[in-house]
Image (cartoon, rainbow, N blue to C red):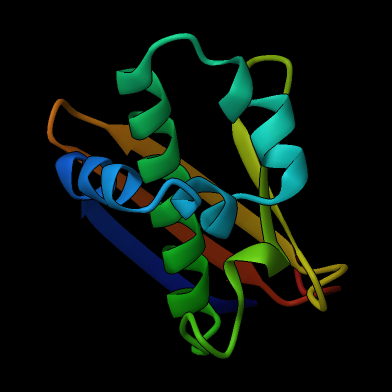
Length: 123
């Protein structure tokens, strides 16, 4: 049974401005594993910004889907990983066993993410 649906859109230039203003902005949004495994390996500053915008949108979309919002749920509680084909999935503290469907997309100006959460044992 579907527990929640969330979507978020973010302007990529807004993330770029945040990175320029605060050198630790990426560390606030990304877990240590996300930063080391993905973000730090990206060569282009524009690709890093696009990547961070997608992760930001994904985490906001999850918070909306579970009805908690950021503040009650930390960016550090959520981790986006990718499989060998590059498809994203999400792991969230205290949501073990829940099925989390995630889609992230980018355009030149925006990153968008959608999350659907299913209750454990209800698929």
